Length: 341
Image (cartoon, rainbow, N blue to C red):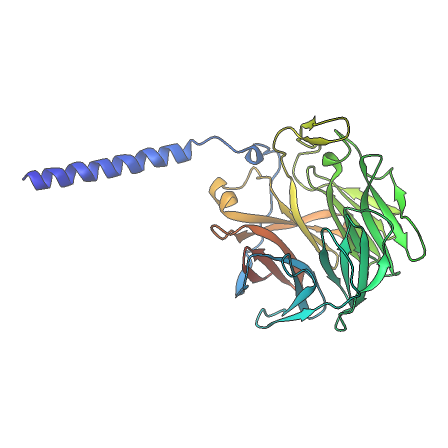
């Protein structure tokens, strides 16, 4: 009898604890990115997971794509490129050859028929033809934060002019880029509030720059002539950041920022944006367990088309994604996952 009583008491305690945890979970306060509910999403069918490729380490990052392959870089083996076929069935490693040089923060980018080795701190950019993998000197005169190639053997760059972000165009023969300080709109400090992701599409002669901390993106040609500004569907038109100053020359974030557009990718006329902001018609648990991707048509002045979810992988950080041929490739830690769209 005593044994039965103990079992009943234990069962009641377990059920009571589960009930309390469930109630606490349901009444937990909204996170900052779950409080701006003045918009809705139209959800398409969830992408179908096709295949997962387990990588040999966690140090890989997405470096680019060609017509038939994806390319990965590795932070520990900076002068190597990993080529992965679009079926994620085969991966090969190839060394990148070059004259000797010093570097600080090396990154690899593959776009179309060419690859680029970039370091905005040293600074320099080297390039070569994909498949030959010999890097020739292209530019070594201008510091930059990001650089993206254009079809005219030039570069569009994000850099700093007078301590504020600016976009610029560089072409072979120029010492410094031609900076456009009138394109990015300062709201707070000119750096954190205007920082974003820079994309180029050589086939379309198009540049896209999307702000990280607010709902706006720029579409221009590769000479930075503006086609239009457009907005992502969320309601955050002003960057939610507070900036402090360590000294007269150094600024820092005084509180955690609220990222709006975390990752993005181009494929043809479509812009894919990983949004960090929950919509009014989303289930909170679904939002917290998935990566939400919003899709915009650049040929229709950046109009919103639809959204879809890809599931998060527990304990593996989401590092970004690429889209090619109606397939999305997402990098989670040491797993590269392919989805059919």
